[in-house]
Length: 323
Image (cartoon, rainbow, N blue to C red; front, top):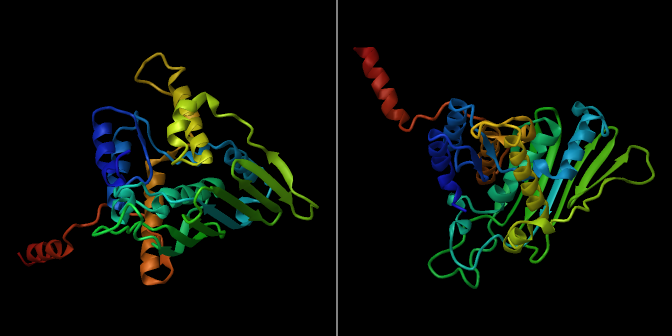
């Protein structure tokens, strides 16, 4: 797996030579890089260009999205609170690499938080308007990473997002639980609430005495045992199962087409596009700025690449006007 700072360059070149692209998260390390990917995907609309936000394909979240659409928690405008809690072990390896470096895309915010940001938007149909975050790096050295090199990638973050439809999102991501993985996603509304714990979905209507079991994850992953043995130590089970489902959807997209270059959109319609990746990057940028400035920050998704030298451009414009 290459470091995220190379994703945009590789994706744009791959689309340019006629290749379908499945890009890992995050799509880039800044919005300008992600925007290049968006423009490349728009220039080659006949090619698949999606981002690996695999939780969209996890059956529990597919069922949760369907239940929200059917009004289990009320109308979409009545969604009040989303609460996400992820606790897991360290993401670092035994040697210094890009996972240790925040500027290269390491850390819990980009590697896990990007999934959370995308998932909340996918479930609720709303996007973040303003955000506030606290991002920290508590583990700066380990037994294997010490000396002149220090770890800069964050291992803890908590953030809030005000959504376009009025919902409030809170999320806590913690890398200080070795040997354990726990993920809970709550969606609350006026008519009840839904919660995914691991891969199981539960719900409770307002006034009900107890929770309803809506979906239990009983599907076995043994058919991918060869992959699991290598990936299980670094990819939590919900993310791995979602990835398998997404790969299966990609396979279905090509099956009905006789032309080897053709594909159908329906099986991968739920996948995150490069436009979704640009939005997620905009939220991550805003969260980092919020943590640095200790204030709420408005989320702004760029549509044009920023001027690399605004002072020079302004001087050129002034000289052109004076002529």
